[in-house]
Length: 399
Image 1 (spheres, one colour):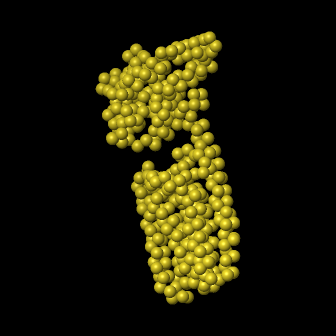
Image 2: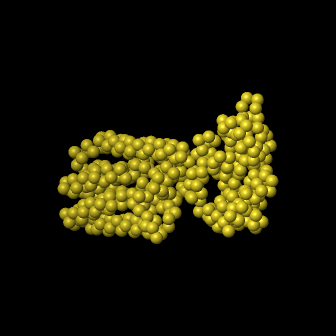
Image 3: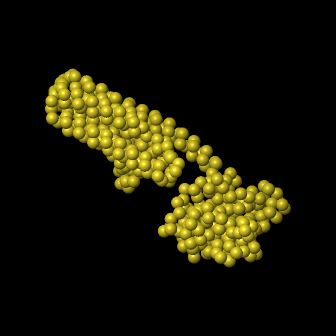
C-alpha cells in the first residue's frame, strides 16, 4: 500500500457544527471549498513545534516546583505531560488513518481543542508564577509566554480569530498575575499590553491575507484549467476531477448523462466555426437551465456534453433526459443577426448503484447507452440495460 505523507496535509475539515465555533475558523474573506479545506489543514501542521513548546513549559514548571516546593506545580507538570501525550496520540491516530485510507480527510476538532487547553494552561502557569512575586520565576515565565506567542501566530494564522484567542489565553492571565503580584513596577505591563496584542493581530492578519491572495490565484488558475473557455461550464478535466472526488455509495443515487448533439456538423460546415461556437454556448445555457444548481454539467469536447445528477431515482432521470432533449431541439438558435439554426440531441444515461458500481463503469455504460440512442434514430434518450449492452458497438468491439 502506498504510504501517504501525513506532514503534507492539504485538506481538513471542522466536525463541530456550532455557529460560534465555525466563526472562529472562518477565513476573513470569501474562498472556495478547496481553499477553505486547505486553510483548515494548516492547523494540523508542525506537530514537532507544539511538542517543543510543551518541553519548554514543562521545564519552567519543574524549575518553579524545585525553587518554591509548592505542590501546585505538580499539578501543572501532570497536566503538561497529559496534554503532550494527548497531542502525540492524536497525531499518531491521524497518521494511521491517513496511511490506511486514501480519501481520508482529517478533522481538526481534537487538535485545536488540545491547542486551546494548552494555551490556557500556559496562561494559568504564568498567573501562578507572576502572582507569587518570585523575580527569577517571573522572568522565566515572561520569557516562556513571549516565546510561545510567536509560534502560535505562525502556526494558526490560517484561522486568525482562533489564533488571536490562543494569544489571549496565554497573555491575559499573565497580565492579571502582574496585578496580583503587588509589585508596582510590573504594572507597566498594563499600558503596553494593548499595543502588544495589536501587533500580534497585525502579524496574524499579514500572513493570513498573503495566504488568501495565494489561494485566490490558485482558485483562478484551477477554474481556467477545469472550465471550458467557450461555454463557461466544466471541461473534460474538470468533470474528471469532480468524478474522482465522488465516492460511490450504495445508499446514494447518482446518474451520469451523456449528451451528443444531432446535426451540429452540418451547422459548422454551412455557417463556419464561429457560428458553431455561438450555437454551443446557447446549448450549454439551455442544458444548465434544466439542471439544478448542485448538478454538474461539462462540455467533454466538440459537441459532446455530460451531466452528473445526484439524489434522483432512476425513474426520474428518463423524464429529465426528455426535458434536456426538448430544451436543445425545441427552438432554433440564433447564430448571427437574422440567421438561425436548429440542432437536436441524443442522450444515454446510466444510474448508480443500479447499473454500475464505480464512476468509471458508470461513465462507460452511459456512453454505451448514448451509442444505442443514436442508433435508434437520434433525438431520443436511452438508459443502459441488457438490450443496450447487447447492441452497443462499444461492447461488440471489445469482444
